[in-house]
Image 1 (tube, rainbow, N blue to C red):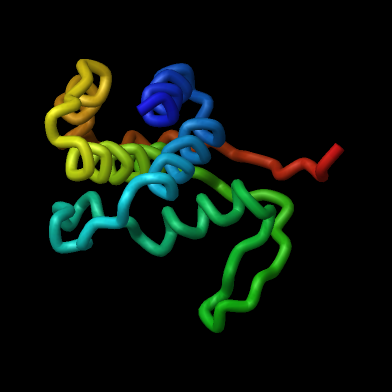
Image 2: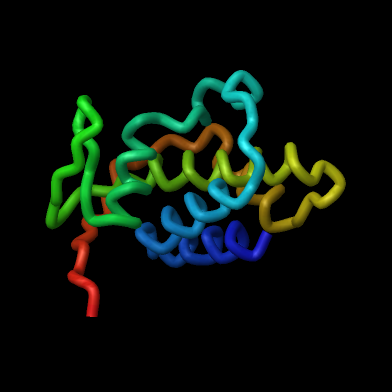
Amino acid sequence: MRQIHAALDHFHRGDFECAATLAAAACGMLPAIDSAALPASEALSARVETVAHWLAHGTILDRTGNSRREETIAIRTAEVRIAIHVAIKRFDTAFPEQKTPQMMSFKRAHRFCEDRGRIAKARHLPPP
């Protein structure tokens, strides 16, 4: 729950890298759910998985599964929204009695929201 709430806070501030990373971490901690339980628009796309993988490792996976280093990628707000929606859906499925105002508000506000083309450019920095 804390990771999702932090992801929401970062999303609203425009910290898309942090929001996507926290949403992906929350998904990783929650039980997996059948993708049929997710609406088609919220299914975790290959692009969202690519963004999450790059944020964690600084590499992207090609179609053969080989990893290659990329210094920068573009992160679209729609991709971050999808990652957060998936985390919330998994949380709702795992803990149906624990609805939080923050998650409910995000789902209402962004359910049919169109991406306005806002892109956050991220750069992976080497470890200290």
